[in-house]
Amino acid sequence: MPDLPATQHAIQFTGPGTVVHNRAKVVHAPGPTQLVLKVEAVGICFSDTKLLRAFSAHPRKSAVLAGATPEVLAEIPSYIPGDAPLVPGHEVAGRIVAVGAAVRHHRVGERCLVQTDYRHLPTAGSNAAFGYNFEGGLQEYVLLDERMILEPGTGERFLIPVDETASGSAVALLEPWACVEKSYASPERGTLAADGRLLVVAEPGRVIEGLDILVAASRPREAVTLLGEPDGSQARRVEAAFGTAVVPVRHAAGLADLGEQRFDDIVYVGADAGRIEALQDHLAPGGLIDIVLGGAEIGRPVSVDVGRIHYDLVRWIGTSGTSAADGYARVPADGELRNGDAVAIIGAAGPMGFMHVIRAATSGLEALRLAAIDIDDARLAHLASVAGPLAAAGGVEAEFVNSRVTSPRVSAFSYLGVMVPAPALVAQAISMAAPAARLNLFAGFAVGTRADLDLDAVIGRGVYMFGTSGSEIRDMKAVLARLEAGRLDTNVSVDAVCGMEGVGAALAAVEARQSGGKIVVYPSLHDLGMVRLGELPERMPGVAALLHDGRWTREAEMALLSLADPA
Image (cartoon, rainbow, N blue to C red; front, side, top):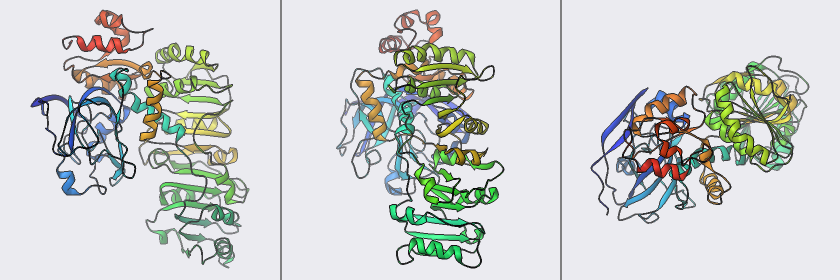
């Protein structure tokens, strides 16, 4: 086994808001089922700042509840739930430098992209993740356990091999690009959850229609009803639609009778805003609520937990008509752009908005119009300098709009992306939505974040709100293939670079939304502070000379790493 140093430089969060540059953190030798990754590069993510503020209260910092026994977890020194100091960093490129005797699927020398989202290891409020309750990449060496990083059922590796061509920064930034990819490619559900739990709620005087169509397409395991008609007419319609011998039906007396039950689908026939707000708390993760207005109007904004759309993948659908099936029929197959879309990216000049704009500009779709909307002129100018030529080359009509001083040329958009976790922006996006628009809530709203939304407009226009969190192996492989084929340069989003001493400034810049792109950390550079690419000509002219049209390159990275840890 190669010799490993006894200690290393590492960034640790030791409590809410507390960042420490530990210059002597222990390097753990791998146990039999473990391996050590030497970290090449790490991207700073806005999610890192949320973890810093929440620390042990973050749902991914809590203990693993299933998928691995306590005894196995105790064997992994890089498993650090609860109040233990954590090493963040989940946008990582690295190389395997040591493996234990029982490791079977990884070998020394492999260069890897790290998939961070351990969906097979649930926590109380989310799932385990690299850089959260397992140590991340903001250190020179990170230990992983092979038992944790193989996907159950498929055996797919969470350390995805990459070739030697791309820079470390380009590989590390595949992780956020994969999160962007997932938000478009992730399949949406347009039926009742198969073998799921269904809740049917109807106000007095409402006729329940369309359940038979839904059940014919996908049968739930059981149904619970909360019905307003005292004469039993609504109950008879539900039972006739299901056939009690096929789908057991239980009738609840009131909301209190539901307790804390969660349902995969909720069909609500009515227009009572207070009832709608209460029902959303009974949605299970991945659940859909279908609001059947039957010609009525809700009449006021509804307080919607937009954080659950993003993190719990809940969905709001509905119809102005009377058939519950119509709401489900409006669900698209995925969140992808379409030919002819008018696209608005709100918060476009931030690091993640930047990626969405580049993706649209290079999509190859026909007759696409793109409005990149932000409030920072300097960041918009930088975005325009990069994305403008790409859009022109791709035949995309693009404009870069400071919404404080002007409005986009398009008045109604068929696709909108919200990149900033400000609830008012979701309401604004709905007001800008055309009929059948798709609304991608990519911003990381915390669960419990409420936005007052005009659901009458959402339902009446058929606007589909969706959101995703993280990525999966298939998303990473999709963007990796583009990178290795030369169809994607993830380095276009690099705004600044730093070593370990610059991480504090980098986190502050990301949290304050002062970065016009991604900040890349090189752990082997211990004392380098944060340097924006625009500052390189003055501070490091030799590195600056290797940029390409102002963009970060592999050659610039090699020149930076060859310096003797520049201060």
